[in-house]
Length: 100
Image (cartoon, rainbow, N blue to C red; front, side, top):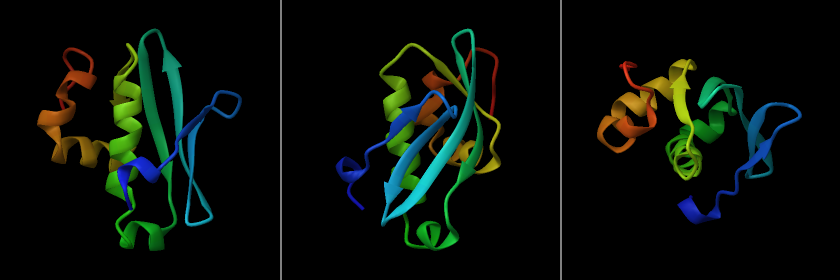
């Protein structure tokens, strides 16, 4: 899937980022404290992960967050794994003193 085709919206009422991929809702729950966004839970059907949607979705989400001033604290194992795998690209998104 093309990076530009993914549209992620921030649902502040439900405290989650949302995207519709192949007619399925994909969400990342978050909590926000001061200037930090804690990414707490990723919900994506397994078949979408197998089809390769996980990396482009997370890449787009983190790029969107990067446009603001917030820092990211990934408490979801899958999101932490993605950031660890792409450490150089996203190290400036992590708060000072946080290592993944």
